[in-house]
Image (tube, rainbow over all chains, first blue to last red; front, side):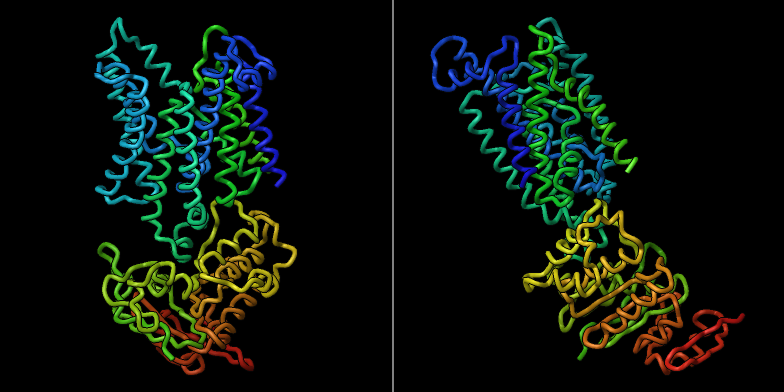
Length: 326
Length: 247
């Protein structure tokens, strides 16, 4: 119980700190005034721009935490991460198309839509290939994932070279690929709440079977799990969750890899508590990283993925060192 | 009463046949040791009986029903399977492992976990993590996980292989004693223990069924010597048998 109160308190604190942080710093009193409906320009900027973005960052982090936990559970590998199986490559290709190919739709929703489609499509492609090749186990999926990621990466590089010109620079594409939370409208936040709630529910339905799979395939099968069917189901579920995270936050490194480790350390390896704990840890990390991204080098904004990688890398090395020592 | 039946089982993987035309009938209350030299097909037979390896031909029946057509969750309630090797991927605690094992029952008495902890002498170990347990403790935890739902059938694949002699003796004795009111089928490497503890012995060699009968009769059967490719010198000490192999 203490852990949950601690995590919730930490999330709240990081939301407040992140909402105060930015190009122009605000105080908690300013925040309160903005939420209470103050009409001053400063308050309206806080309410219309900064708060939605901070909340969106929390949701992106929660989705990455969930996705990472599911992938590590399915592949029974603590180094598995949510962008495995080509979802990162697919999302990046989708975003590149949205940014570089002139299509008659507003980019604000074309980009998340194509990134989502790319991430999910790539995972479906990987599953399809592994089925055709008759290698529908976790190892087969991984190999197919590596192959698909390489092909998608090559396609994206080609598109970037062939289609970028004076109007759309490579920098725009690159900054998306390096990750950054979109600022949604308040009605957009409503949708995000629904999406995240659905994803948490979806993940919880997998929890008991992920625990079984953690006993090894032979034991899981003996305990009544249809292993292959479940691996497919869990990968599909994980990829929907990751695709949603990518659509709103681009490719944010390390969060999906590291959050489950921290959560496992806090609540143990059973998935029923692990999944929500990992979502909370992910949310805290991305909220704080996004605050740093916005406020470290004003007026410029550092890509979020760079912040999480720079902060997450050493942290992860520490975690590994601890683990090896024990 | 017959509870588990193998009918003309054949298991082939690629070009090699691991099990050839094996038919066996198991009763609801008996302890059966499966013995045989390396590559005899003991593990394959056990996996086929447990439903974790689908036979190429033939079928396994649980009661009257074809095991292959039984939903996996239902099979898991009826048949407990103890694999040869077990290493969980996450460092779970003893109580977490027992909870996962208990999760396959539709309903359990409230005190099932407590009773299991007491029956397998796991008191005081509940919060310990798998990585901190000794070999003997691990064997007890694994058995407790499988038996927490008290399945009518237990199939065990040489679970004692890595244990020291005392723990091996304890474990095999416990598995054999389970045959007093349940079915317990165990792949056993140690022939002395197989003939001393178990009601019935099944001998396999090169994927074929060589002999099947009461332990007391089979121990003097010359087919045993042929199956292992040695000549056994049989020594009896009270209830227990000692088989010494000579070339």
